[in-house]
Length: 287
Image (cartoon, rainbow, N blue to C red):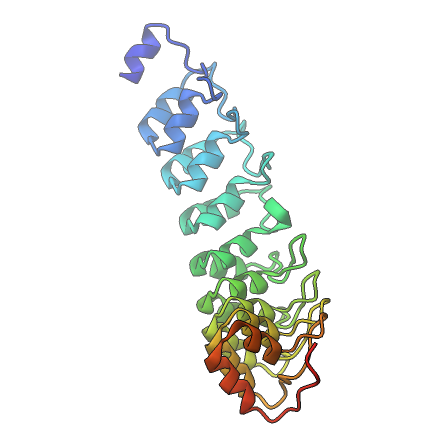
């Protein structure tokens, strides 16, 4: 049908109301045969972006269509590392979606920067770590030119993102690297442990506390410790784990002078209150 229409004089590079060409639509949906036909016409631009500044290669990479990606990468007039207005490259999008095959294909191309920052200053490994794509994380860590500890614009590293999202497998992988700081704070002074504690990720909290180079009682710039934010959010399991450490002070107040005990009293977390009452540390006067 595509061949017939082209032979009847239908424009092969016409766009719809969203600026999408037939090639982009075919690439986005993995129509390898149609992509080949369209690229056979001289007046088809294989790198034309749509109204959202997404090229055929980016769309194919984002959806994991390895066959289409391979065809497009054979063209000299396709930019393999183009950064669009949303801060996405084809490689960044493939890493974020966990498409191992596409990631490997793009890494074989010269000119593809595996550390290129995208949305919010996040690198491909940052996005892969956050969305728990262990395969992509392992591929990237196997390269000497990938920085596994590069922070985003908020100062949060790939480990921070994985810890915040409760991705235990990725956390273990990253902690196996000697060049990853397990206690690196973000722009607000919040460590990966802080992020895991705030969101109630008990497994990640246990993993991080197993490290000697992780301070379990580090406050952020507002004076909130991992214990304080876990208590405020009512994460009883995390509170219990943290209180099992002898170096965590439940009487340590935050920037507003409210202690973990203050929060539990005022929000009626009865079980958490019991845990705090069994602790050995003295508690300063309530705010």
